Amino acid sequence: MATQNPGARRIGSAARARVGKVRTPFPRSSRRQRQEELLLDVLRQLTFLTEEIRNANLIQLHRITAEQVDRAMSDPALTEAMSTLRELSDRKRRQALFVNREYSAILLGHRIGAYGWGELIGHLRVLARNAVFAEYWATTREHRRSLPRNSLEARVGEAVDMIIDDLADDPDEWWVVGPPSEGSSA
Picture: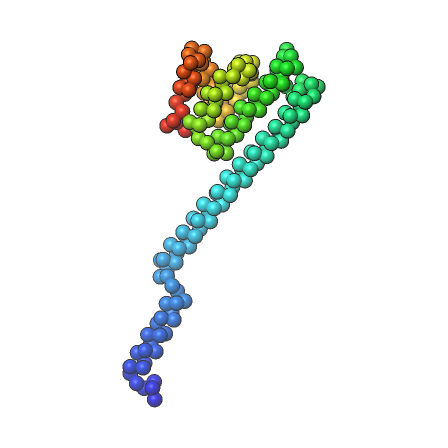
């Protein structure tokens, strides 16, 4: 009989030992490490999806607000209802709503990660060169006082204040005014 052959028994033992290894391809410590790696990967994906949902919500909120501004700009009664700025002509009020919408779009781009702090500052430098924006910014100075000091909008407001002040001193060097655009993160 073949099973009485010592060589055949060794082959059978080796086969059984391999089958046992197939069931547990990783030693226990490796299996635990693999489970931890999988868990970390799932957490990374969940974090990414959470951020994407947050960004989608911010974009949708901006879209809703932009639609309201569009409606208000097409109807003087709605323009007056939407604006908190007093003693402005209908034309100036519409301009203020429009530049606020432009500013909000730039800020949204930074919030959702479309561009970093340096690019945000660059966009704001260009926007601040516009006389209508500068007038709007001066008119809404009191509005910004209610912002929490550590909020993104408060930090951006301070940056725009610096840009506008620097532009008043030297408008020909507009691309370098305000806070540093690189190496700073907000």
